[in-house]
Each structure stands twice: as structure tokens, then as C-alpha cells.
Image 1 (tube, rainbow, N blue to C red):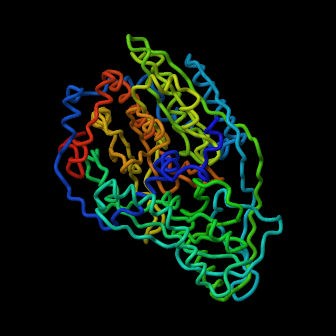
Image 2: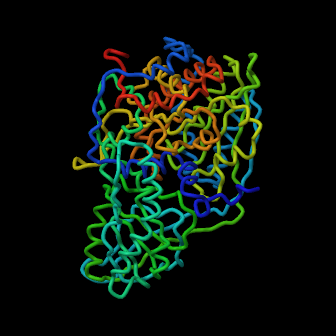
Image 3: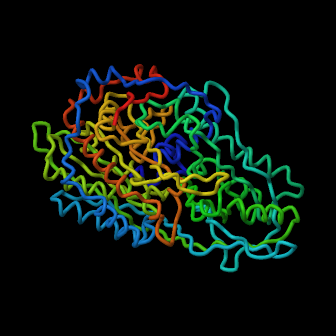
Length: 568
């Protein structure tokens, strides 16, 4: 099967970005978009062409919230999930969670299929860093490890510290308000960064062979306005967001952390990246998971520990880097497909509700819980069309096919699909990391809904307004890049909406409570109600209308498109 070896080592950059979705592609997109972007604030605006095709705003939500779980019930399910521990692909915790989801779908009367895929699993077991001599000798507080980097012997590796400076921040020229320019820059950034690192290595007297290389990894201080070139609509009636709103987020490390090949070629013993993040924010960051195994151990430290490490490197102090990890070949991991037949004349048509099931904490990935709630809801309130709930494995394992596995294994369902709704990361609250420290704003994390350039966008706008799901942006693809774990479904020609949020802690392992202190059950319930509402609306729209292109309209919208005053 051709997809068996699809991984980030063999795929094209565009395929990699599409597969791993918003967290990968958007990291690059906003990292290269204008940090000082001045997108003019327009008045109320919605896509009128799409609205005409759909017959106008359908009004109040048709959802019966009494048929959906309460906030307390959703929180119980999330806590049960978190108690399993990190659900990385192929682990017993992930297998148990998939079993639980499958049982939930079967209990709702759905037909459940499990698609098994195999891969080489890499799991970090222990990691440490110690400066061995000099005025700064002693243990260094390590925040995390570079995922799938490599492994050391139990005793670690020893080498002199060599500081290379910051990871190069490559500039972009051209029109940064044009999504195609940004998309092209994504490819340029990834293609040029390894050579830029090689240039820094070449400038080190005597080279870095046998040394432990230290580099600063900048987390771009982005404003929310970096997303505005793709903005179709914003639901923020209380005006809590603006182009200048702080959108510095840790997921951007997926693109700003370089691959390790240049260091390995130069004979380095290991690498340490200093994240521009506070200790609490840096701790446990599981990044950059988009690459396959690289056979060179690498660790991550926060900015506080990094200051001392930088000084130790200036003194050429020796250090010991330890990263004990296991590599297990041919590990099985299952994706789920659950089918709820439609009850109307168009039951042969399919609407896909998609997510992934692997993750690290209370947010990555909790949308499977919402999927089961939606399955139970629509088992009682049947739609005209057939609903297909897809929960793929492999978001955090490069060798697994993820969404492309679903497309390959179920061509009949894909061929019959008239729409796709992808759901990720429910219940997230906003935590900022700046001069004030790492703290909660008391608000929901801004959520993004990426949409295909078809009239399906209007169903998303209508639903946001009817349900009043605040602090949410509806965004067009960035050039050819569509974001969310369902990007492959969009690429397959299925009109798609992809709901996602990306808080600072999204990728972070937390052995204490899975970041449950940042979870908002009321927000998750409202997001689940929104998902039910938009599925109701999609079910009422003819397939030809859902597919109708409206790209010229969306490209001409004022930015940003706010809802009318007084709404909600």
C-alpha cells in the first residue's frame, strides 16, 4: 500500500504541512507573515454571495441542548481520558482511549470499523543535562526533549558546549497580505533553514564534532493580525480581539525549530535548544513532532535555564546530555470509523465528522469525546444524510498515515462525502507568556475555523452567530494550504470546515493533571452545541450548493469581517 511509508522524511513539504494541519502549516504561515501587519478594521461584513446561495441566515439554532451532555458530564469524560496518561500513538493509554471511544459509538448504535496501522514507535523515557565543570557546574533544568530526535547510552554523551547563536529567522519579501505569497514562503522557509544552520556551524572554529551544540529558538512574538490575510469572518461581539492582540504561541516551534540533519552531518554529540518561554510554559512541550526519527539526541530548555547554559557555553564548559528512549518496530495503532446511516432521501450522501485520537493532555485530543456526544445526539435526531465519524491515529507519529489512511481505506465513503467537519482541541482557555509572566486572561483561547473556498463557509458563519460562539475566526486557506487534521479531506475535494484552537500549552505533556486547570467545560459544551448546529445546517443544503465555488468573493472581503453591532 503506497501510504505505508508516508512520513515527513519522504513526503513533499506541502504534503507534510497539509497532513499535520494547522499546527504545522500555520506555524510557518504566521511566522513569516508581517509582525507589524496593519490590516484595516472594517465594519460589519459577511459573504453575501454564499448567503444568497443558502437562502440567508436561517435564524436561531435548531439544536436541542438537552440531548447533549452537560458541561459537568463532558468534564468527567475529559478527566477520565486524562487519568489514562499521555495517549501517544501505540501506547496502552492510547489504545484504551480508542477502545472507550469505540464502545461509545457502538453504544449509540453506530457501525464501528477499526483500521490498524503499524509503525516504529519512539518514546522518551528519561532525559537530563549537566554542566560538568566550571563556575556553572551542576544539573540544568530541562523543560522537555526534541521529539523523535534520537537516544543516548544510559550514561549519556559528553562534549564541550558550543553556542551557535539564535536559530536563523529568515525574512520574506513580497505582499504579506496575499495568502499565496505566504504559502510560497512556507516552502521557502523550510527549504532554506537547514542551509542557514549549516552556515552557522561552518563558522565555528574547529567545528562542532563531538560537541553539544546550544542554540536559541525564538518563539515569534506574533499579533493576531498575522492571521488577517486569511480572515473571512470574526465572531467577537465584545471586541476582545484586535490585530495587535498577543498571539505568541508555542506551536510555532514546529517550524522554527530546525531539523537535526545539519548537526548530525557535522558530527555533533547532541543539541540543546533554548526556547523563548517561561519555565511553566516551556515544561513538557512535545515539539517538533512533524519530523521522523533523526538519530541525534536533542533537548529543550526554558529561557531561565538557557541563560546559565549560554554562559556555560561561552566558558566552553563540558556537559553531559542524556536522552534515554526506546524504539519499538511494528507497533499497531488503530483508527476508528463509525457510521450512522441517514434517514432521508439523500442517505447515500455522507458528511464526515473528523478528528484524531492521539494526544498528550486534556486538549490533545479531546474532540473524540465530542464526537461520541454528537453520535448519541444524532442517533435520536436523525439527519437526512449519513454521518461518518472518523478518529484517526498518527497525528504524533510521522510514519503513520493519519488522515490519508482514512482516505485510502475508505474510498467509498470519501467518494460519497458532500462535506467534512473537523473538530480539535475543545474547551481551551487563553494563557499568555510575556513580561507579566505566564498567566490566564480569563477568556477563551481564540479559535480558528478554516474553510474551503465554497459556500460551506456560510453555514459556519450562520452557526457562529446563532450559537454565539465567541472569540472565533473563520479563515480561508493560506494559498494552497488548508489547516486542521482534516486537510487531506479538503484536498480530496470535500467542502470542509476545520475547527481548531492552539493555546500555548496545547502540545505540552503534564504529568500532574494534563493541564486540566486550563480546561473550560462550559466552552467545550458550547463548541459541541456549535458542531451539532452546523451539522444540522449542512444537512439542509444541497450538495451542489455546498460545492459551489466562491473564491473571488472571499478574496475581496474587507479585513477583518466583524459581526453587526449588538449581536449576541
